[in-house]
Image (cartoon, rainbow, N blue to C red; front, top):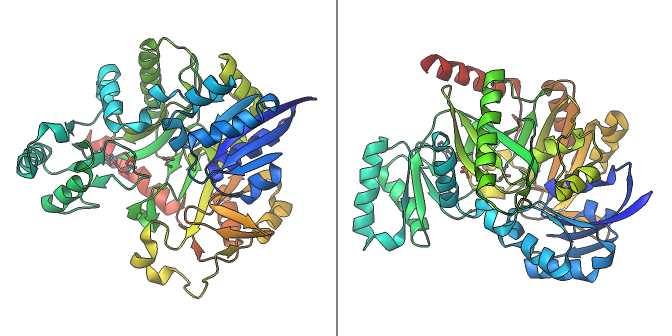
Length: 471
Ligand code: AMP
Ligand code: GLY
């Protein structure tokens, strides 16, 4: 069997799922080189060479690639920070190794303004009404305040405030959720505007889906829809987070969407891809997952809330274990420019994240949900792993923001561990995921309990029915 070396740049559980998919290879003997945000127990065990680069600094990652250059065949990157900071350009230039992610110039996740302007050119129907506020255009706070209030008049206050630069899910403020008055909205606006440009856009009523596609630069291979749970607490309450869990239905779309709505998604995503590609000379630039679109379904069309330039965390975890092709071959095809299809098993998947009690500031808000008697950050995954005896490969336990020290695991600050259940139905997948989450011991960890619940899905279904009726 051919031996190949792969460097994975890892942030958390999303990349652990990628590492697991690579290790399932039937066609290659995979040797892993992992540049990791922390000493992740899964990665540390599986890697031939493992380094910790806490800020995922691109220069450090590049040095690591150079040090094992002769043994590495390609580099796979999952996380936004190094992609935005130009990891692909740097590593390809200095080592000649192919890197799977978009080139820096096309990593439009770096700027919400750039995204809106690109869509405005290619598919203006996908944009909500928006206005860009640039600090250089205003003389003082009074002037920008009156411009903001005039725009709020036009939007009838139904507005969303978005800083141009990504803020780890923390910068976006939504009318009715994060502020109830113009003063509060303006305060949030100013806290971002003092640093750089801010968009204020129309608040769209609808149901969200996450849409991702693998891409070799020339071909666009859409993946099934997933649904992300962004809010910190059950019933979609609390602050936005990186994502507390996600689900995928058996087929390609979600229970609250029609086949026609899935077709609309495919048509819109394809239009954006083709329009974008036509503007770019380098036909390898859009490699990896350059379009991970957050769609909002309104019952009378689709709007794009934002685009990311990498796979979703956790949404890609819902998909990776279902890939029937050899994932290493999928990667090679992305590099060679001949990725024309990816086969996936038809199954439902549910991912539940366990997170520290103070992730996103929870502890202050819902103190009763958290067992404060558990102060240790030590986490025991053995009972969760033991469930693989019962469920085989229908359960995946992927450590994220977790560090191994002297054979013991400790929770760090971000999402600690993701548990994926795979089943013939969403209910079956959800039960496995929740059983796995429950089996994780120690640490003051908690999780949302309503990811893919019957009630949550029924609410989405009836919301969409109402929206379609009104359309
Ligand atoms: P983003 O970081 O742009 O994905 O925004 C985070 C969350 O804010 C989204 O998942 C939505 O729930 C919400 N959001 C963003 N933009 C809009 C919008 N135009 N209308 C309604 N909700 C939005
Ligand atoms: N789940 C949201 C994200 O990956 O940005």
